[in-house]
Length: 234
Image (cartoon, rainbow, N blue to C red; front, side):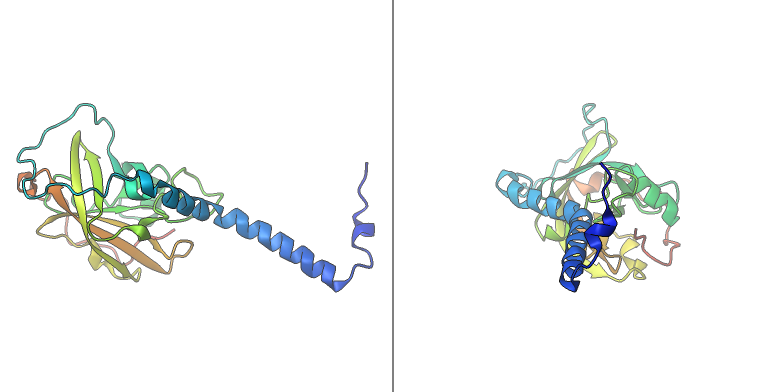
């Protein structure tokens, strides 16, 4: 059966075309924002199940580093916002290499410290991306804006479990590369574009290591200062 589109649209009133435009626009909006909406729904439904915000006794942190052969994969876990993703080392500080790493998980800025080293271990993940973009982690940090002081972040790295407690959250312009700077304390920083769906600003969540005892960490082995002019964004 052949559909005669000419007859369908012939002599239609302006109201019909306004309604048709509204329908098409609605479909497109739902298509593009559905992953963000879905991530927020999952977050609110999962709040009753969250155990990652329970307090840890950080007054007596684990004094020695214990490797666990069961922790085979380097990964970052934040149960409060349903994040459980592999850590991928970017090949270089070029935006293209960092974005490439983000296709397969959460990217580590290669010029910053790593878990187990003194300094600022910097990680980047998408809060949103084009629906047709490669990778399964295009919305992994869609709920990073839900993290607040006191929340816990777990990093499994080189068969060691590191626990961090959020102590600061900042939103900065892309040109503010100071957030990549190294520190005397052992911290991690999680960065994503903010607000989700834009590349206007960058949200950076900072957390300090509480387990194992940061005194067991080694000295920073990466180059410093960071030779970049702008923070990566999709």
